[in-house]
Image 1 (cartoon, one colour):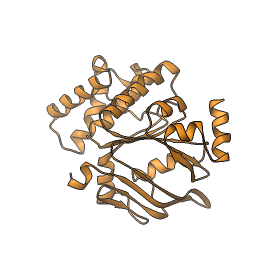
Image 2 (tube, helix red, strand yellow; image 1 turned 30 degrees about the horizontal axis):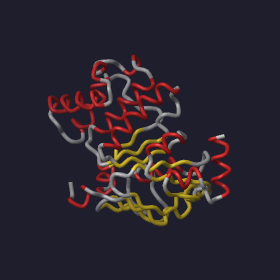
Image 3 (cartoon, rainbow, N blue to C red; image 1 turned 30 degrees about the vertical axis):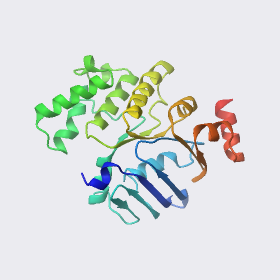
Image 4 (cartoon, rainbow, N blue to C red; image 1 turned 60 degrees about the horizontal axis):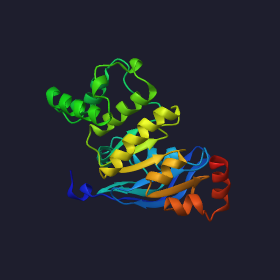
Length: 253
């Protein structure tokens, strides 16, 4: 890994993204320091998930640039370009719907990318996968199939799978929204452990309590723009923006 990537910062400058005639992200700029936990919140359709997908190179961008470590993503960059591939190595992506391979056990799901992408020998990939499954509390479910796992267990396998590539951070897209409260607690506990380990975490979430407790910064996206950002106490307890106040009054009650 390039030396500039070991303590990387993320810089987003003037980022815009359209789907057809619809402007999803409108001149978004922000900087995220290494090891920060950033909660992206805001009304549905505000651009939160699109921003994550741009950071991971899953979406092209129409204006601006994204810098992650020494790598730059600009309009016209291709999904399989070298900078995009390296950016994906720096960030693991965890999705709301798990996206586990149903024909593979939990262990095999975690082993697959290190073997295929990093070319790790099977024994080494297995050792890494078992260690990570233990880290997320699933050492005893290594040989279970996804259909035999609860939603919270599937999501923890998905986190272990992302960690198997040894990223410097995780992008998490509403990963607890489909889970009941007890299972949400399991997954959020894993994320808090990763935060303590110094991993950079960027989370699209509706869990305002988790954002208040665990985030270093809260960023509110409304209508494709950053409406407010700052420490949780400022943004969640004393928002300056009327749109943010209205959103929080609905979700917090």
